[in-house]
Length: 213
Image (cartoon, rainbow, N blue to C red; front, top):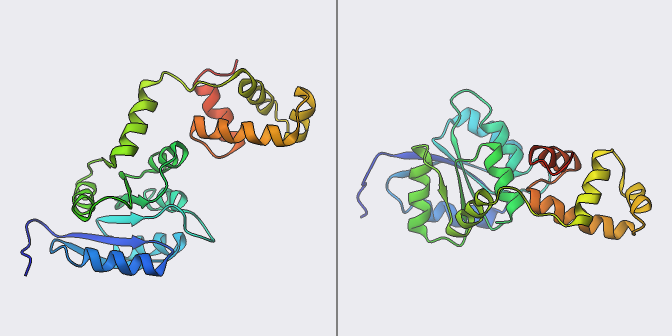
């Protein structure tokens, strides 16, 4: 029998895959100082259960199928008074995913490839309000912080300028004498570099970083 080593931490688990939830429930059940209060299969369900159960930590996946994603669920969960801490547990570690999750209020960001002991430690750290990042994620965050601003190509800056004017992909393609497919490719790279996923977000970050006049 495993003895309890510290204060009990209560959690709510959110993942849209039942098999993944079952595996995590079994794993977390082996930790004597972690209690799972409930599980959610969608972002909307996680928001409702977080308000009802009031766990210390919400273990949140990012991609949740139909409905709101993990980032939006995190934003809603952390928007209430005295919210639980949200620890992202996912397979996705792109700059955009990390930036969006942290901006939404996530306390930590862990990859599903981490060892069980690291997951347990991260849950307790999140409950205490301490930030926990998987090593690959921490490296990305530090690299982003060290860079004074994103490095965009001249063509990407041209497209950003057109975005700021409110032009759509077709009009941008015409203005720059390139194909719409090329515009879409550049937009994908711009979004990734700026850590956003919308046109408005790209323009806002570009202006904040003084990439646009």
